Length: 310
Image (cartoon, rainbow, N blue to C red; front, side):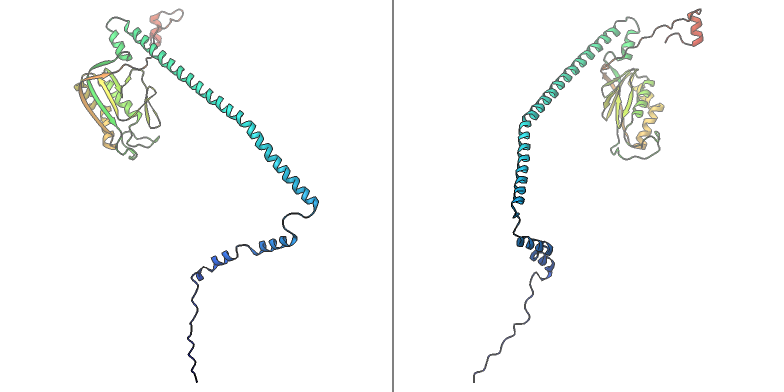
């Protein structure tokens, strides 16, 4: 009797590698929601998407014809108006170029007239003869000057974004930082004038008795012209005396305090010769004797008002 070979047990079936992703498998296997599937089945049972009645088919054809007509008319209008729009654009570009050229020409004319006016003013200031002629030229900035003097450089701190409160320019109007302010340069210039400077320029911008140092944001303006740090101040005068007098003055001590408190960088040196350009624009003002009031002489009027001219 033959003996039957024993049947080997295959063991438990191996698990699917994607058994842990049952949710993803369900989504992939059943991508269409049951409700959508039922609606699709009902639509197929009803005979598909196209209507069966002749009237419905006519309405569908009319809608398609109307849609095609609208698209065709829109495309035709766009094609017709495209050259007109392009032509208007070209005309606008030509007008912009023409106006820009005209503005550039006017700007050149203004610069030419400004130079001509400046030359005439300088010539008029050089006409007077006598002891005051050179002084008038010097104070008005009509001519370039050179001579011995000093060079003072004032620059922002290396890290000008940080700074503490207090110090010599304590103010609530803006935060004090390591940036040089317009009022700092005002004090420097006034201190140099008071110490005996005969002529001053900042970054080759000549200062006169009517010059203004103002601020626009963080920029410093001299006669409405922006300056960029470092600010190089050249002053004509007796270099050694001017340097000593300025550093000993209140404005020189103010500058030293800025250096100590805000790390503003400064350097001053005596020069055997400095050159200052003429002022780019001149403002000429004249004075006239004040007319005497009826029944009063000039002397009585001057005594009453304390002024003889205006």
